[in-house]
Length: 317
Image (cartoon, one colour):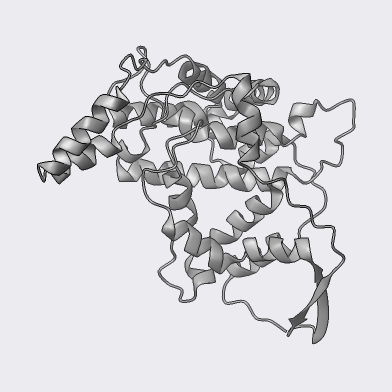
């Protein structure tokens, strides 16, 4: 028999090990039950969230034109609030993947039972909430993000996303001359001006334009997808059951990738303000969400209570 130190660890165990196969809550119910919405505004917020879920369900994902969000320029207190909001969204994503008991009912629209809208909400959250200010919005970062948080809780995420999608980054009209830069680097190195040489080496390169003739050559650079067709199995002792559990090769790889110790190690190695992606600034926000620590507890599983949710999310992917 295993004893759990607190109600939270027991709840995490029940969520990860004894998950329900179906759900009865609609997507609107998941929103209102996970986010604290003022009862005075509950009716209007519910209507707005209905519009947002419909909008996200039909939305074709298109990357924002900007590649940097305001995350690292936002005050820590507001950043903490955003991290809690993103954590709740990830919880909803995991919960919503359980099929709804009336998913095929003609009385419920698909946007009320499908997890599609929540996956898009997860992908677009940082880029939308922390996009550069539009002409109609407050200019100060603190005021701007607070305004958007209020809009989010009122269910107007679809309006925020439409505003962020209209923001255009100024085009880069300067094209670096690589031959000239090479000469400058050599000259700086010969003059022992290593700072200038280093800055020139790290300066942006000209944008690459691809055409159809390049893709056959590019495909050769990537190995073919790995398929696990071998029936080989390995013995994996389970001290709890005192018996041998056999895992296929693919299950072994999956278990290895989702090992919480390795996930923690990987997150700690991620450099800040790197890995800029099409929908957000970088991995900074996700890293901060999952590396939240609980000071009262000792071992890694207890000190990082959010890491189990990361494993659940990766398992879905």
